[in-house]
Picture 1 (cartoon, one colour):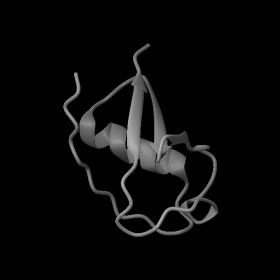
Picture 2 (cartoon, one colour; picture 1 turned 90 degrees about the vertical axis):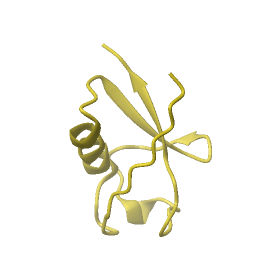
Picture 3 (cartoon, helix red, strand yellow; picture 1 turned 90 degrees about the horizontal axis):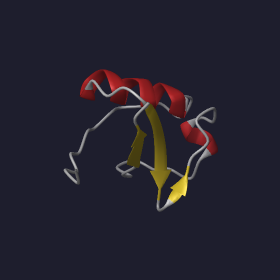
Length: 67
C-alpha cells in the first residue's frame, strides 16, 4: 500500500547506505530488495552518506521489491 511511515535513523558521514538499508529492514521487518531514493534518484548502496549530497534531516524514499 501507500502507507508512508517515517523512520528516523541516526547515521555518521562514514555510514554506508547499505547499512541504512539493514537498519530499515530490522526496524520494519521487511524482506526483499530495498532500494533508497533521494529526490527521485536511486542511490548506490555501496556509497557512504558523505559520498552523497544528503544533509541532516533529509528524507529518503524506500522502494521494496518482494522476492
